[in-house]
Amino acid sequence: MNKKERPILADLVNAGTLDIEKFQNEILRPIIKMQHHLLIASFENYLKKRKIDFSILTDQKKRSRVSAVYKTDNNFKNLTLGLIIGHFSLNEFTFYTANLSEVHKRILQITAQRIKDSILDLKL
Image 1 (cartoon, one colour):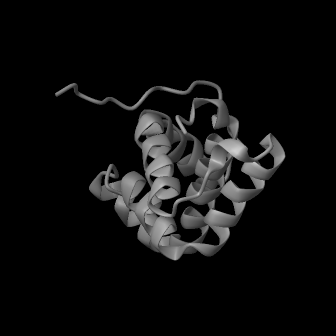
Image 2: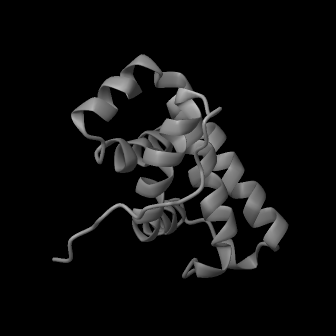
Image 3: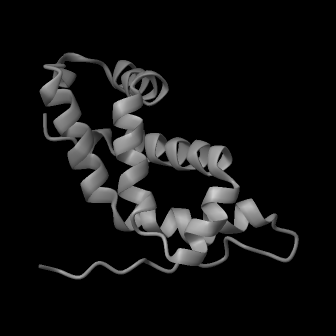
């Protein structure tokens, strides 16, 4: 089993950065980057389970479908959140619980964008 480590993403935080932005850039983005392949695999599995033939869609329709999934499917959103939140330390989890809806929104936005940007990586 290979050990996962959070990547260090430089130059995302400066003196005027809000706490939520700092959390997004120092905690969320590195975890999401680290989990990239798992997030892609979970989306591929989602499409397979629902018998969605992604290969026949245009790139624009694929991007729209990704957005629709992240807007409407609460089970998939919760799976995605779990894949990220499970990597929080206790201090990070404390911040997360105090800023729940904002952190959820940011995780889902970043993840959906990452999947849209990786449409060519989908093996379907």
